[in-house]
Image (tube, rainbow, N blue to C red; front, side, top):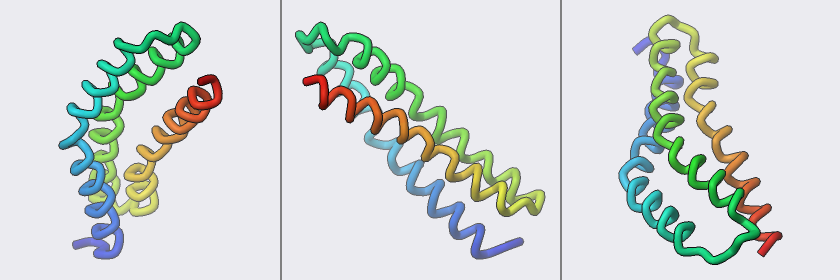
Length: 104
């Protein structure tokens, strides 16, 4: 291995993200059915945004695997940044959850 410490971090991050892909279809369908069944007209826009955000989850996970390209060209800082770039996805999700809970 080129840098064992970085490799272990990348394996940890990518492994955690990959494991979350297993229950993802269940949670996506569960949330879409919940939104389709909701009677609230106040949150129609938020429900659409949330559904679209949840649908993009696998794209972020798969994009985080690009970190291995940086790892193999000895750009270890960029590899770690790329692996953690997916965590930015949580900011809009948490924001939408907070906004929807204050509206209810």
